[in-house]
Length: 137
Image (cartoon, rainbow, N blue to C red; front, side, top):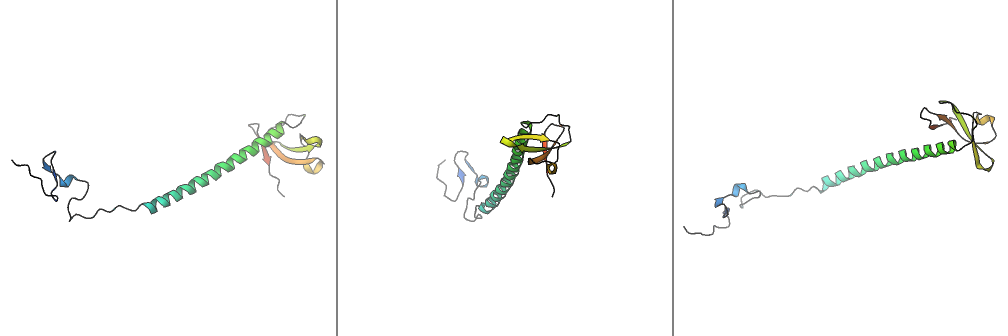
């Protein structure tokens, strides 16, 4: 049998000695539909934009939570370093003042009854963490 080269339009696999046009993942003749790549750049841009918005929003949430935690830590540090000659009761409101030479002290005396510089009112919770009380005007 004579090995002749098949014409270019015929899809013949010489390794398997078979016609395998139907097995190819691409068009093998001129009459086949054109293969066009899908433009996914718009979809990618929308997805990237959504991801960026989600990441930025989550970052802002985490940053605000971190700032609140640091503020809580600073107030607790200030109160625990302040002078007081009593054992605070859980759930009670106490007032923090600054006196001469930047010394701070904790008191049960309300700000309107005291002449020292008022720093804030705080409540001791069950975890022994001081929570700042927001004064309403």
